[in-house]
Amino acid sequence: MEGLPAQARGTNFGRHRKIMPFEPSAEADIEALRRQAREKAAALNSHVLGYGETAEREWAAAGVAAPDLAAMRKYRLERIRAELKRRDYAGALLYDPVNIRYATDSTNMQLWVAHNPTRHCFVATEGPVVLFDYFSCEHLSDHSGVVDEVRPAVSWMYLYGGELSDKRVEHWAAGIADLVREHGGGNGRIAVDHLDPEGVTELARLGVTVGNGEAVMESARLIKSPDEILAMRRAVVACEAAMGEMEAALKPGISENELWAELHRANIARGGEWIETRLLSSGPRTKPWFQECSSRRIEAGDLVAFDTDLIGPYGFCADLSRTWLCGNGKASNEQRDLFRIAADQIARNTELLRPGLGFRELVERSAVPPPDCFPARYGVLYHGVGLADEYPTLPHAADWTEDTPDGVLEPGMVLCVESYIGRLGGREGVKIEEQVLITETGNEQLSRYPLDARLIGN
Image 1 (cartoon, one colour):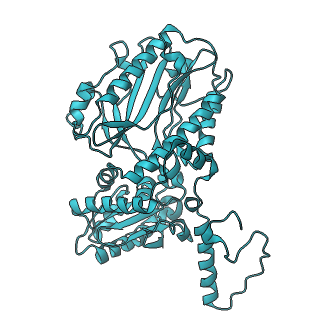
Image 2: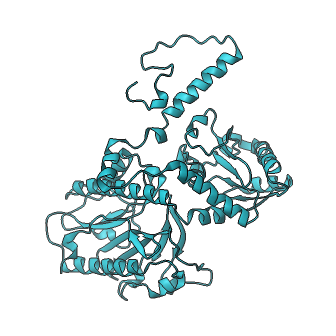
Image 3: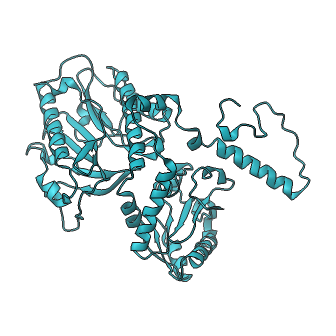
């Protein structure tokens, strides 16, 4: 039992215990065994066990303290409820697994539930947090301290309901409407992030109207607490350690897919969760941007450009981009010139970031690619980041339209600063991206992975 957390030691289970045939003598025996199983599973939850020696050693070397997770979870619920009150909602119904993570700090098959609407959560503005999870999954949120009740999820996707899905919709909606009536104080308005039309219609029939839950959650997630920033710092440190292992594996002859797998492996080894994209390309595939990694073998002298888009420890996103030169040779004049333009743009646009600056003013003052590179520009100059890419998204001034939202930079916001540089008719392109915290007095660049020195020189 030496490897178990303290709360798991001394419980009635062991690796070599003989399992006897189960013969229940009473309902009480069944419930006792269920409680025991739940306690065991909760004590062995991945969030309880932590991130392991490798990640902890790297965080200690980087001087990044552990976040107070209880305080972080409390802060997040307060942010959600403040937005619900401001917008006059009785609660929020959440399906997006990233939003559920924000509200409960619990996970369950995150990528699967992202495209299969099965797991959901109700956050009452004045009342409980009720998590609707898979059967016998109560242990997955016991660690959080913010989930008041776990109920079996009712899923009405066709996979489960087939042509009888309408009956499942009625069952599901009745449960949600009961919660709204019980805790809404007469308010029948709820915010929902993702919901198919059948659900909206059935809730309306029961007197519950639906508003924009994405607006609530993106606004809540916008300003990070000090503990969230600590968790993000740790995610960035883990990501950059993984990038180091990836760069060490970059040798002529390795395929793009094999190189990308190194980042994924190293992220998972440190307790990271997934990578949102497959954006890695080499040589002629670096232009235009948005090439997903392939079986192409990387050659000496190729540029290799990638975007991590990585969901790491604590569920935080580390969204960094680098461009490396493959092999031991020297970069060409064209490669160094493209890299200089991108690096200068990033440096200039990072320097601009400070609290109180308006979004529109920021983009109008920002450095942009030169005319022969502008047509191939990256789609945005800046975007928010937290548990994933978040609001706001700020385009180039030339791309600003009447439906682009304006706003103001505030302390606690985190932005990614983007640059992609590739010439019209050129062979290769350069991608660089940094992750930057808005502070009370200016900004702090959270990403520290060095740029390839061979591409910086004159």
